[in-house]
Image (cartoon, rainbow, N blue to C red; front, side, top):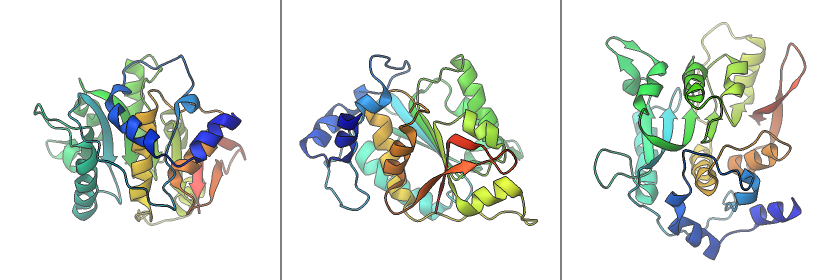
Amino acid sequence: MKNIRTQLFTFITAGTIIAAAGIFTGCSKKPNTDRTAADRLTVTDNSQTPIERKESWHSTNKKIAIVFGYGYNTEEFVKGTMSRLEKKYGIADETAESGLILPLIFPDDFKVGGTTRISRLNSKIDGIELCGLITLGAPENTNKAIGALQEDYSNNMPYPVYTFFPQDDDIVGIQATSDFIVDKSTSADKLEEDKLEEEYEQTMVEGIDQMIDRSIEYMLLTDSPLPSDKDLEYHVKKIVGEHYKLKRYIDAETGLQSVNHFIID
């Protein structure tokens, strides 16, 4: 483990370029059981020091889906994020030059007639070979939609699911359907104690662009979900960055500490 952590703390130069060159060969529908996810990680820590990287756009059948939910679905944020990611990874479309990133905007992409249903997530990615799913401000019942995806793989999901600042109040469901959850302390207070009588207003977290970038990087450098073991907190810290303090979520009723649910301050 010491060697693994040394790798993770090391800024990548040539190694990053090599990883970028083979970036799309690591996405798979079946998990690689030869090594653990931690063994395969060599992730650039760019939370403080900017590192110039070569663009790694490449047409690919593999996709990383990003669900833009509450607080992260404004036209300005989505366009800015996708413009930046398109230059590096390409945007998924139906052409022969289809790129890696598949954006899904809630509620616009989830409307059925006059209603909006997050359960449409299943049909949106049906037939698409995912190597990762990222949700930002996930709406109510997102955990059920992801749970249905898990059932398709007999609860042995082959790709990672990273959840940031969910608005789905089913805490147990969120935890069960995600590699990890990152929450804000204000959002966590609402989920734990339900003290707010008015509807909770989701506000964008500073540094979310870097969290998205590092999430994609982790997903591309692993070909299976992050295990919920003693190293998970370490990996989540790397993704969140050093700007925030990270602590584990504690259930207000039971006092139990979550394995994969984290709060940032």
